[in-house]
Picture 1 (cartoon, protein in one colour):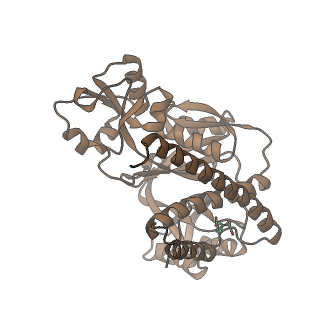
Picture 2: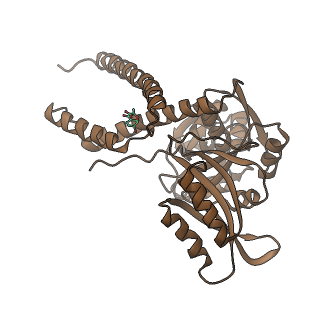
Picture 3: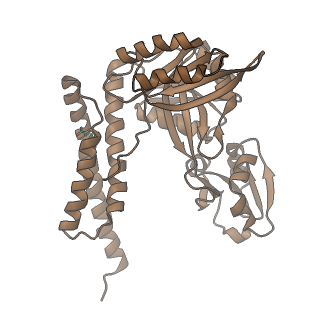
Length: 386
Ligand SMILES: C=C(O[C@@H]1C=C(C(=O)O)C=C[C@H]1O)C(=O)O
């Protein structure tokens, strides 16, 4: 006789609680590790140790005949290590840039539940600050709120894995005196959100933003006779669906955003493409000091001479100093037809002597050079198991 389902579930709940307790103990140890590295000044990330750890865990599970796939072990521990790395980074950064306030004002695009709002929540949470939300209707307004001091930070989407760069934000960065102080990757996961007990067959009207509708076109086509209502944003759609409260209507949007409006999920993962991620940048009035122990990125703005090979000459400087470039983007310059402004993101700390030397040399090949900001690289690239 198999065990009764509720008994099995009780056992599972007990195991899950034990797992949580162990995860919390490991999380606490990350602070100890950070304090130790603070004294020894060791780099925070140790990819060799991470690789060894994953290899040993896979071998251990195999020896003990745990029946767990190596890929499963790798995925779970990559996520655990990511938490440990980010926890240590935040610890070191908080020590370096002491801020007494327990809350932060963040300006973002859209209303409650927009992806920019959810990213702002995640950023405040990461630094254990209470979030005071400043909802904005344009990117310009976000820049303005930070410049005037009304907001401590502005949250801006810079690129998306499906739709690419957000040009409007790049163009606004050309003229700002604000500094980039952070980055954040937020997964875009669209769901069908409803107010009451209903099922997919009863839904005849979908509310959302045109971009979301487009990103979920394959799923929508699979539904019979469904009417689309376009909204200003997916948060407007969620708010509307919540207030209309009918079994035949649904909003397409994010699960966490939906919760803020009391909506529940009827179906998840409805986007045409999985792995849809938006990278946000965080801007502030003052530049940030970044600990030399953590992985750091710097965003530069540059124009080169108009002669052949001038961009190549400039980029060779990074090769010479072994500085990795993570992004190169070009945008037209307003009022100067056919001239280009280059955005270069490099893996470097502006206070490192090599970076200073590289930037000095770069000046020789550029007609204009500006550091937009230096910030902790908070997107932790997982190591692979060899
Ligand atoms: C915890 C440490 O810091 C980082 C996180 C690791 C982990 O969570 O296992 C391993 C190596 C480091 O990249 C450590 O150095 O041991």
